[in-house]
Length: 190
Length: 190
DNA sequence: TTCTTTTCTTAAACTACTTTAATTTTTTTG
DNA sequence: CAAAAAAATTAAAGTAGTTTAAGAAAAGAA
Image (tube, rainbow over all chains, first blue to last red; front, side, top):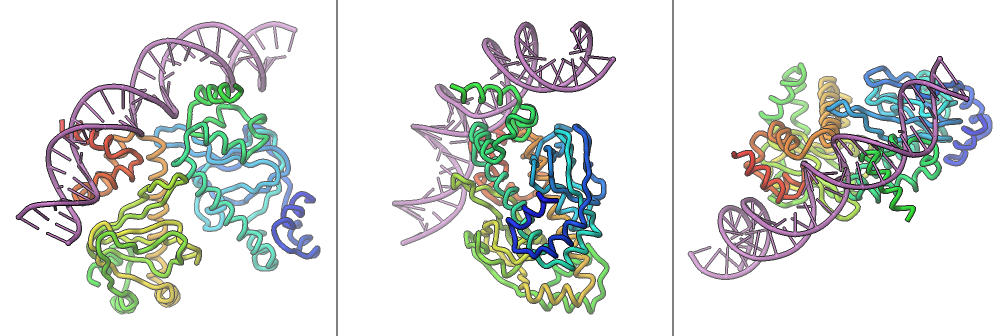
């Protein structure tokens, strides 16, 4: 819980009592590599905070090809926040790329915190804003930049992930083939 | 107002008294071709229903290039619904592509209807769902299809628009150059 | 450890789309 | 209406990224 407390405090002003109340609502869970934490069209019962490991959020396109939307590593939130909030079905899949330890919060507990802890309302507002911003930025980058520039953005956003996850998944995130990413990487080495 | 009533009745069950109450909250407005109805980062004071004409919703990418996101013609809603709802700043620009007649509703009136007319709540829920669905579909199509296939989708979605708006704007919507769209069209003619 | 499977690399051929530029057509404006 | 401006057409050359295929390296399983 130390990690989550630290993250919350880095975002909003919060008393120690509120923080305690808050952390009580989370449950630690583990998932092993390749396991799915969420599948499209299922109902969204929880959202997660990463303590250890890395997951990918992805969709299938109309030809059945997978596209990675985002990665989430230590001290990041993930889950289908939008569907969680609106009580609609999941719009994407989420899969562990490494063995993963998370803090999960159910909708009941989430709603409780929203009502009882004002700081949590503020905190989630920031979360949603960041998620939206990052999503919009991603779209703009895809429209504006070449594959190599997009790869630079990836490296900047996820400094250590290029060592941790397979090229295949990074390529899918960038919207290119693994072969072409291999060429970009070779070129960058000089 | 006839048009709007008809549209609402095609979506939800609604009494004539509610319908009257509802229509009273809208104001007819006109905009001339090329005029802007909304500009990015401005506050979103109203959303619109098209009585006559056509508008485009677009963004600028990180290189300052315009990208058309969607077109709205007769009997469609448009506006930055998300920002309107969340009281945040506009995420895109909206410009008339023809002389346009719309029904505008202010946030105050919108909120009033939400509280007073249950059918309106249901109606807007459907609106939001459709908007989201169409948005997701657009993203999937861009990921899955070639330019020519995307043009076919455009023709299906907007059957008469290919005659009404310039190729330049259609190309921007499809994410290709006007020159390439010209080639696609020639090829399709046989 | 060894065997199998998956991932990565490299390179050549290919293709969907862009760029440039010149010409024509259409639309806008005074 | 004529003049100017904007949009569309065409074609040739160029390029970012894909496809295919084969071998090398790494990871996973037994």
